[in-house]
Image: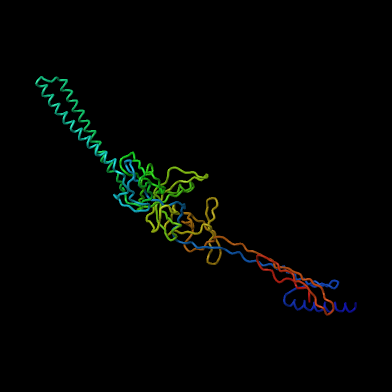
Length: 436
């Protein structure tokens, strides 16, 4: 037992000496020996505090603008639906979907067999009516002469006159029939009323075509092109031609923004399918009535492109930014985050050259997308406070090592303590291991 006690005293002296050495390095350790075991503790409780960071910007010069954004699809400024004015069977289709046609170009024809026969029959009827009229006039002349000679009664003369009137009416009707038959024959050939892009062909050879009820061969519409074709041109027309000399997009503007949108405002249009293409544009029409979908109320707004980017196709998605308000080019502006408004009074914190901060009252102009115009209260180049980032603190770690003392001449084992964590300063070294 005396030997063991002597060993304890020796170990205690060695450890105490180690503590003195470590103490000179600024490390404080606590050692306890209990029943042949020892514990080494390394308690740390230091804290670290970083100063707050102030975010600033400068008063800049330039235009401030506010815009409304929306999406839509590209459409032609106008479309013309060309239809046969007469019914018949389609004989030829002289254009294709996607073709570019010029005004006066043949689009298609109908079978003219029956139409030619109608012209021939109408012409024959007119000839017969003309002969009958001539005969009636001759008879009337003879009746008048006989009446004068007393060989014809007045009633017979009147009857001959009525025959002339009736024959004249027949000639008039027959003449109109010839005109109609010839027009129908001419309408069997459909020509393009405008120059443009063919966006729909609704007909094929052998299919029937129902003639339009009105005279002529075209009707103008506005909106997206139809690409659905059928075997009959009834209702949908034979060929749809888009006037691609001008293009538009129709965007749905939310009711909260539509009040600031007016016809004539400038806009910028971009196209997801053409990443490098941008087109300037103008607002050209706003629907007076709203459309509601999923409780969202919007107004259809037409934007006409000033120029057409190469490669742009009808129906492609387009994103528009409409400038609803803009300041002068030499306006002063700052980040909106730098402005504090209370009870209608707006203030800004200004940083002086010596680092001191003062509060300035300012007058606001256009509140734009990338800043707010300042009309009074600041000068160009001044430094303003946007905000601050609060300081963060942390504590160092603590740890204690424990281990068994080995027998005389034997080695000890032990584990060190863990370091602490913190958002400010990383924890320092863990506790000492308990082993030798």
